[in-house]
Amino acid sequence: MVTNTQSGTNVHEIAEGIYRINTPVSIPGGPGSFSFNQYLIVDDQPLIFHTGPRRMFPLVREAVGRVLPVERLSYIGLSHYEADECGSLNEWLAGAPDAVPLCGKIAALVSINDVADRPARVLADREPLSLGKHTIRWFDAPHLPHAWECGFLFESRTSTLLCGDLFTQGGDGQPPLTESDILGPSEAFRGPMDYYAHAVNTHSMLERLAAERPTTLACMHGSAWRGDGAALVRALAEALDQEQKRRAA
Image 1 (cartoon, rainbow, N blue to C red):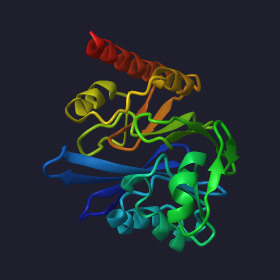
Image 2 (image 1 turned 135 degrees about the horizontal axis):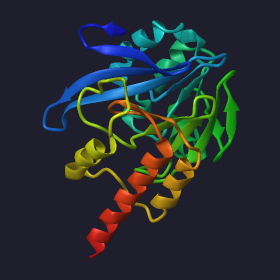
Image 3 (image 1 turned 30 degrees about the horizontal axis):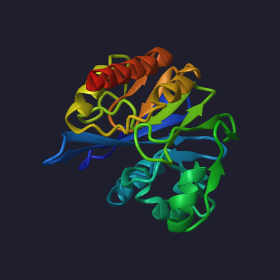
Image 4 (image 1 turned 30 degrees about the vertical axis):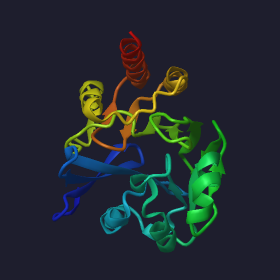
């Protein structure tokens, strides 16, 4: 459903109890047509993963409010410290008085426990957290694709990998959920402005994610994806390996 006709902000359920909030934007001088997504897990202790940029807060808040009361939120999650990940963190904390930031230990140490109005709930690598019917686990992924504090969430009930900036696609992020190829479009988008750090252990970190056998990939930019997530994550690892070999040749 479209929640704001002026911005085009919309909400769709991509897995049981997991909603994608999507806002299409135009970035002149940058990638042109683009999108920002947040993911809302509706449960006894609701979670939003990615806040969106601070200036987008009214749009995202309006969209969340169409699914559940904002004040019910328990966790405001982020992959790493960047405006589209946590730019409106304190606005969410103000609107949800029982909510706390949710992140990995490095993010809490170097940024979140200073800038946030409430201390973070810190997740260790592979630590599970029950939200009720859904259970999430945090995976440390430093510098994948960028940022020392980076990490991802895997929701075990729906086999959904909240994969942040992995598989970023240009365009308006439609359709909400696709089974078509997203690796090709995401690699084409990355080409002119490579935002990967290319850490030496990139392949092994991607293999850890693939081993969870996700069936839904909740991308932060572009369409979410459904299918053999393990195969797609391994294909990304192979593409990055081949690129590094070409650079070294």
